[in-house]
Length: 284
Image (cartoon, rainbow, N blue to C red; front, side, top):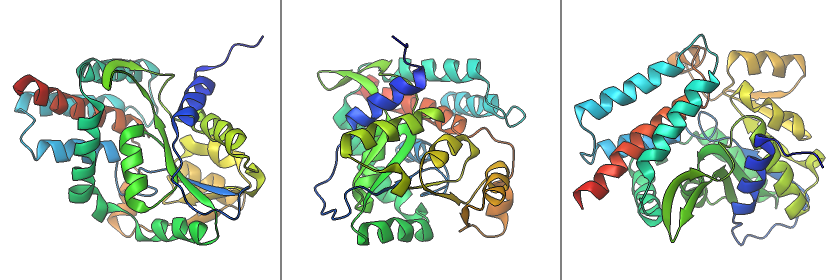
């Protein structure tokens, strides 16, 4: 019997954790899948979460320096270093041990309203709404922790979210992941697993992303879209005659071309967020 890859396991776990909102969907075999960071929202959602925690006075100068060092760790010639990702992931997970899931959800709701809502791309939101209006379900697919991803999906009136799943016991984080980060190939595996569960025809489905790291997801569906694409994805989209949507202007579009590892900034942001969350429990 073939052993499942880490990406397959992460995808299956994410799909199993997905919760559907009770929405009318007369077109039951088609759905749309949206990446979050720089596709649905300007910047990294976990970074904005960390920023919201910082505004509550939950960081020290030493914490912020540690976060900055974590960010710098990933700016390595535009390529992700697996050892660095593992190290940062382990660091973040060590900090969340013992934190209550309900607390993360509560803070996520507050910070979304304060910091994230104004960073949703109106054009991408309109694309999502067009699928809802057509009677199709719409899912977010992101490396962001699933609890935060669900908050974003709920606030946007979407069907649900696929995100990275952390292990919990009695409503408290253990500091371990279930599966792995929902990143790259794992996103495609999550959508495959969800499609099996929901009876979706992937040839009729649509996916949207800004990053070449999501090519496995984009290639999986019948209707791939490049939204605010990085240079590699833009080149691939043009070569394959995929639809390109760019809602950036001026400096934003220029900055998007800088060699910053996709997904890695979110992990470093997760470290910062975890540091701040840990302080809540140390002071309570």
